[in-house]
Structures are given as structure tokens and as C-alpha cells.
Length: 331
Image 1 (tube, rainbow, N blue to C red):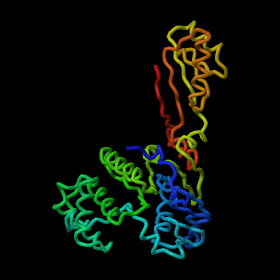
Image 2 (image 1 turned 135 degrees about the horizontal axis):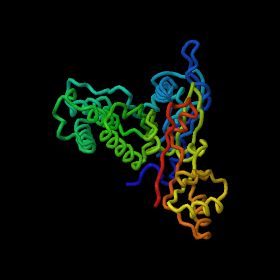
Image 3 (image 1 turned 45 degrees about the horizontal axis):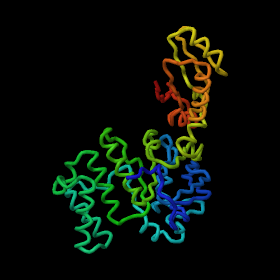
Image 4 (image 1 turned 180 degrees about the vertical axis):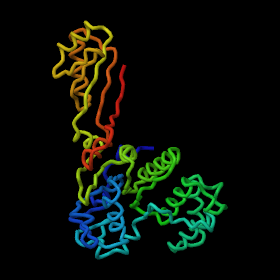
């Protein structure tokens, strides 16, 4: 199964963006929540909207899913004008909010059949689709039990299964893994990848940076109602300085030779380590290794330090208490 980041080629549908917003604005009284937001989300992709609490993420989802109206903006979802044809938009989308729509008093299967009724499916179609989705989301064993007995992860899976009853082409997932344990989060990630490989577009809001890094083709960081930056995870990481390659040696002679052979090094005489600024690209890494090879020098350890999405997020929305760096070690 291809992951979302691999893409799915171009079909006639991809020419029309799944979601397009130009100049989206929303205020509550004096408080400007969304300030001239522009978005363009290709069909069959995962778009992640990141931002701290109160940044306007949920407001954006509510507007684009027709739950509330904007103050201004040219907005299209699934090719339909949001203001002129909200019913057509509703027919094309599904929404899974932060708070579960599951009715705890009835069983998982009954929740699914209720959704099938709301979508005006025939009894036989409703039962067939409910059964297929319960199996797909690993809920068959719990189907006859009241949803109130489900774990948080099971409730989220049921919630998403209910969203899929109407076969939406675009799904809005508003913080879908908040409060879930790591196993349930990874299970949800697998489900999201599966949806995208079926051609569904996913609009994801999240505070989990690893989630956006793992799933999204395109990420926008929302701060104080504005898009602070957008691009792929790799493009965003390149916005933040601080990437470097670290070489460690056990032989002082090799250490001194490497320091002389490489440009822009920062030395640590005590640790016998050298730090070279780098964007972490393969080209830069190869250039450094080629220089070492041609001088006949071998480092004992090479570590690539690259800024991660945490660094990007805090650089754009405010400093963290502790800087965080991801690293890969190559021996």
C-alpha cells in the first residue's frame, strides 16, 4: 500500500483542488480568528494544519465543512462554491471532530446503521456497508457491545467508520488522535494512509508534529490567525537554521587532519569532535565524505543533526523551553 507521501499520480480529478480558500477571514467580535488565509489542497493528498491551541484550526475546519460561515473569502470544497452550494459540499465531505459523535447508549453496529439511515441508504446497502467498515476498522468483535464500553481508540475508529458510511471524497479530521495511546495513534495513522491510497483527501488538524511529519504531503503552520509558513515537512525544516554534521574521532591525528581538510568547522578539542553546518542533504553529506576520503581520513562516528518540526513550530509560534533535535547516526 503506498503511503500518502508517495503520491498517486495525476488524474482528471487532481486538476480541481479538493479544497481552495482565498482570503478566508473570520472574527468573533473584536477577535480576528482567521486573517486572510489562502489554502490550496490537491485531491488525494493529506494536508496538515498545525498550530497551538487557539490558533484558529478548528474554526477553519468548521467553516470549510459548512458548520459555520466565514466573514469573507472565496471558498471551494470538492469543486463547489461553499457559499452558493453548501448542500453539495456536505454530500462530498465527512467530518470527524475532536469530540466523538458516537452514541454510547447503543452498540457500535447500531451507530453504523443509524448513519446509514441518515444517508438514506437502503436496509441491505446499510447493513453491507456497516459490516464492511466494522471489519476494516477491526470492530467486529465489539460490534454488538454498547459503544460506552469501548476504549478511546475504539471510539475514534468507530467515529471515523461512521464518517465513511457516506463514502466522502474529502475528510476533515480535527485532532483525531488527541488523548490516544501510542498504539492507537499508530493504528489511526495506518487507517489514514489507507484512506488516501483509496483516493480520499484528508484535511488534518493536529498539535502532534510527528503526526504531520509522518502523514502529510503539505503542512501549514497557523499562528495568531495567519499562515506563518507552509510547505512539505522537509521544506519547513529547511527554514530553521541549526542543522549540522558532527564527526567524532578517537585518534587525535585524524581529528587534526580532518579539521584542516574541512571548511567551516567548529572544533571541540576535548571530545575530538568537529561540527560542520549542513542542511542534512545527501549532496552535502557526500561532499564531506569525499573530502575525508581523498585525504585518507576516517571518522569513528558521523551524526547528522537536522532541525525537526518541533524546531520549526517553536521558531514560528514561540520559543520552547528546551531545543529539540532529531538525529540519525551513521557508522
